[in-house]
Amino acid sequence: MEENEQPLHDDSAGAATLERKHAAMLERLENRHQSRLSENIDQNSSFESTKSFLSHFSRSKLSIETHLSQIRDPTHKPDLEAISLEISALEKLVAENSYFLPPYEVRTSLNAVENLRQSLDDVTSLVIPKKKFSFKNKPSKKATTTVVSAEKHVESKLNLGLGFRDLSAAPGFRNRENGVLVNEFHGNEAGGEFTLSNLRNCEVRLKGCLRALFVDKLVKCKVYAGVVMGSVLIEGAEGCVFVLASHQIRIHNAKNCNLYLRVRSRPIIEDSNGVKFAPYCLSYQGLEKELMEANLGEETGNWANVDDFRWLRAVQSPNWSVLPENERIGMMDISSNVENSDEVSVESF
Figure 1 (tube, one colour):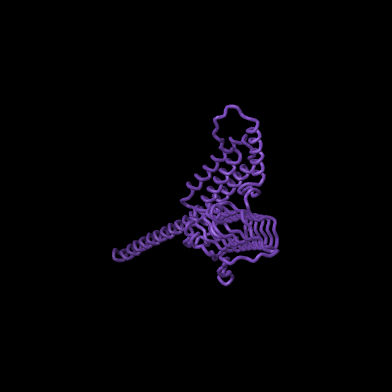
Figure 2 (figure 1 turned 90 degrees about the vertical axis):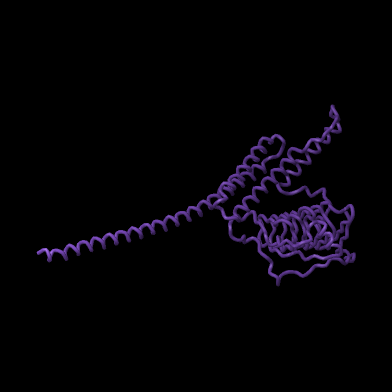
């Protein structure tokens, strides 16, 4: 009888061992499943956090820009201080969330914050101009007149809108159609500001060195410029070709334009579309020396590193692209003088 009971005992022990192994396997599978679910949740959480950050950042940036546009006179000085605090808070927000943001988003957000600071500085300088030192105790009638004139000048600048300059005083070409406009800057003229405003179907040739170039409302124009030692600001251009060398270039409200650039910093576009970029391709006698003296002698490749301030995403902005090589113009040599005719304007400023 004992011999018959032994096999039964062995079968029971084997079944229990098999059941324990099966339970352990099920536990391992469940743990692995939960681990995968946790990984998916973490990934979704990061995506949602990035999306939430960009939405919050855009709303805050728009709010600051709106407040800046409403400031008109020195009585708003407390508002300027409040806006400065808002910009600092926005910068802190970027820093605190940079650990999970893609590098592109961090860079773009910091550039936007820097742009807000520059706009704040511009508005502050217009609304609260620096006081001139004087030993006079009693204000004269002439001084009173000067203050009133200055206030009117500030008001006229504010009416132009943020981010752009009063173009009425600077030398330049304005209100022209179907012409070739040429100017050369030599000696004491070098380093000044120059304006191109309200031009249509014109070709502009600027030789020499400028401190700044302001472009406003150009349609179907070709602009060939030598060295701009400071900034180029384009506000409104359609169907144009620009060949420019500058330390900084900012483009606003441009449509279907081709830009051939040599630039020290990354070009900035805003509210633009159909904008294409290629390397600088201008030539005239003395240009290479001017480029070297302006620290623009070397090609940096920044013409292809464009920041779109209206495109806060990690993927390529659809508003700009690199101009294909088979669509680029060749080297533009503007060394030769243009013959005088009714369509040609050669001017000195």
